[in-house]
Length: 141
Image (cartoon, rainbow, N blue to C red; front, side, top):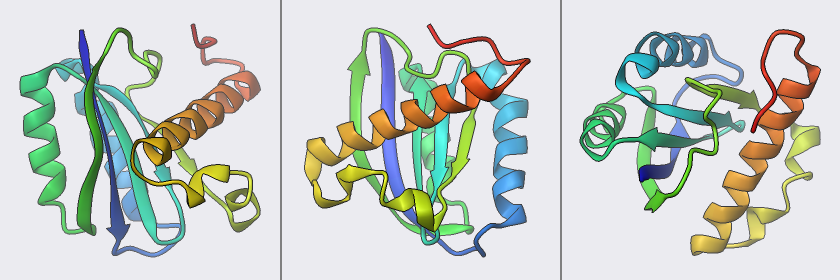
């Protein structure tokens, strides 16, 4: 079984930001070694990130992320066990949500688990689009 943690936080950096690139560089460098996969979605004011991996590793990573000064007000939206990874092909995927795309996500008006499920589905859609447009990334399972 795999643990999946989805959080949201308030960005303290510009939009778009070179800090996002730094976050991704760190994730790409370390996540493979730690068995973590996931997806980071950035709106103008917020980060949403899904992390997948082992219990002990995710506890450490979530604690490290919580202390990161590039964001504030971190809130865990869901923390549960899943049968398989949703982002198995991604050490850390990333999507910057433009204002035009913001309306595409219908989950903004939902709350609780419904919001979390909607956000994860939206991340999966963004990952699938990115993979479909890529000539080098393997298709998702």
